[in-house]
Length: 479
Image 1 (cartoon, one colour):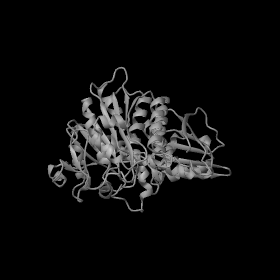
Image 2 (tube, one colour; image 1 turned 180 degrees about the vertical axis):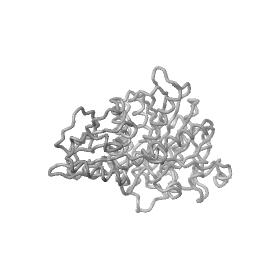
Image 3 (spheres, rainbow, N blue to C red; image 1 turned 60 degrees about the horizontal axis):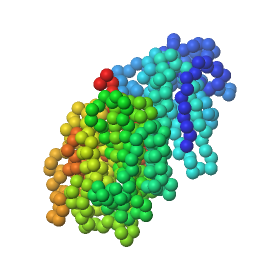
Image 4 (cartoon, rainbow, N blue to C red; image 1 turned 135 degrees about the vertical axis):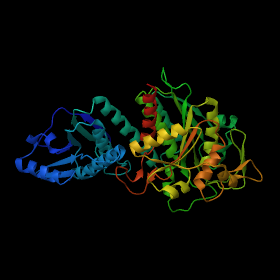
């Protein structure tokens, strides 16, 4: 698991491999090239070739021209990220540990996007391989990108990598208890207040959803309550992140098929995104009061495990008829969302790899979203999603979608109609909210079977950049 670090650089070693960013050839230092090389660069630029490569004996130079476009700005930034990743994929073949970047253009957001794509694409999860990848230093000489921008970007990259690491870990390592240790470590490093609600406390709070899912496990469950509360937060009421934390999902007695079950280690992606985002916010000292609620257990099978037909009672007293033990994530979230009411929150955002239906509807390219009582917050989150290219599609929460959740023997069933299953699951969760609420089903984009652009195969960390920049925008709006 290599570490990627971006550093400010004052000088360029003209004999080493080099990446050059510019808007046109006139911005480039001609001393870096021979006359014939520079003439070739100008000719290629006149033909609208944005990426060029100069190969020399023992050295390679990559030139990326950010050519003016009539595209929307967020699409230009995404094109630049992807170019950064393409050049990284070319450079990595040299098996070096340091790369220089000379930035001759004048737009800081372009430089930021290029570095983001280069660094995010450089992630590897090689903990269990004999051959490890080396750490990477990116040395950038830039007049438009300030040191504070580089510091912030390094923290963002670190948070995304931490999230990916947690999700990529097999359950043989990241058990429920080990996840608790990782959460403690993140809280300690980032000055978060942290409380664990253990099994006894969960029982006293009547959190029957978490406890029911945990009945088949060899380890006790918990709910972590992590809090960042600076001295003068700009919000009077807290924002709350709720992250589903199923460390492995067999499906319980409604057991999954073996095809793809190895990926069910990623069913704690929501909790991983929530805690790493909160750590990032605290590390960068955003003046916001934010709480993360992380209900965590695995969903395994033994003679004590919950069974289809069982009836359980969750935190707010609602009785739930269990039709599928593979619809377990919503039971954890029912407890956590009910518990969130005690904070009188400004807004609650839950993140969960909740339904295969969301994945089927949208593929891997976007996040399924619904909202209640917070249209403006969701609009801002959508806009942020475009800016960081972690996009959302809003689905309705019409009452008709709850009809199939009606139970003859309990207040509600845990599954309803197969059609529009992601919306039906959201309607189940809505029952446990009485505050402004956004639901994000990240089942599609949380984990890729193959790499795509600057997202590696495996955990993507999608959600961290989205939420961090969303909260950062709220701070800016309040200043």
